[in-house]
Amino acid sequence: MSTLVIGGTGTTGGLLANLLPDARIGTRKPLRDNHVRFDWEVLATYGSALEGVDRVYLIPPLGVVDPVPVVESFLARARQVRRVVLLSSSAVPESATGMGALPALVRTMPGWAVLRPSWFMQNFTGDHVVAAGVRDGEIVTATGDGRVAFVDAADIAAVAARALTDPVPHNTDHVITGPQALSYADAAAIITEVTGRPVRHRSVSTGELAERLAASLPGEFAAILAGLDEDIRGGAEDRVTSTVEDVTGRPARSFRDFVSRTSIG
Ligand SMILES: NC(=O)c1ccc[n+]([C@@H]2O[C@H](COP(=O)([O-])OP(=O)(O)OC[C@H]3O[C@@H](n4cnc5c(N)ncnc54)[C@H](OP(=O)(O)O)[C@@H]3O)[C@@H](O)[C@H]2O)c1
Image (tube, rainbow, N blue to C red; front, side, top):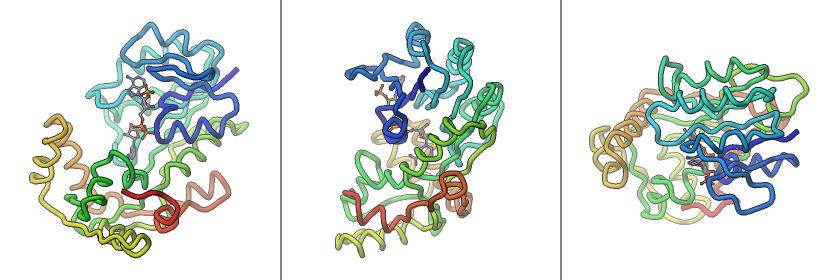
């Protein structure tokens, strides 16, 4: 039997697949031997992706307002699956519909874990809007002085690997954070100090941020993202958990260490 890693070509799934010798990577564009075609939008791909699989790392369909129907269809076909680890988010509260309804579906499986990571350190790299800000020398958010305990996706993957392979299923929600809550101004100062590149943070209103984001994203999605910044401003992410150390036995990586060893921006 093997583990189906949905999103195995992405940030957390890619790191997780490296930790699991039996990983089968679900992707819309299979290119390698351990890839299998999987597309949330194509029901016909579910059955073959699940063949010989008894564990699943589940990244829900992205950018879908209500992912419940497709995830329900998928889990209904996952009869031989003994364990599902869902990637949710610390910013998504439990709800009757939408993303917040997925944990309840996963909890019906024989073994499960719901991962609730805080914001990823990887947002400061690659295509993310925060990384674009680093490149411009100015990160623009609506977070004010609110703090976030940014977490390394590698630590999320390490927790996921344990949740999938520990002999006893965790059957719990894991709120996963880095070791220190930082404002975006703190993060910018660390980047400047470590890399020598001047980067600052400018906080704008939620409405202004939504407008800025709407230049490159659908308006509804832009408003949701700006709203999450408002939550940060209100202190929603200002907490540190010991989950990484409790589950993996080693401490969570610090933002400073991440910046020192990663190509930021
Ligand atoms: N960024 C943050 O700060 C943060 C914080 C907390 C939680 N999260 C959550 O993290 C999740 C994203 O995880 P990630 O960053 O590890 O992934 P990611 O790097 O954004 O990669 C997305 C993955 O999804 C796959 N994918 C996209 N559309 C698909 C479809 N229709 N069917 C099947 N697979 C599809 C892609 O695979 P292919 O292209 O190969 O098909 C890719 O591997 C989101 O749900 C977000 O809510 C993010």
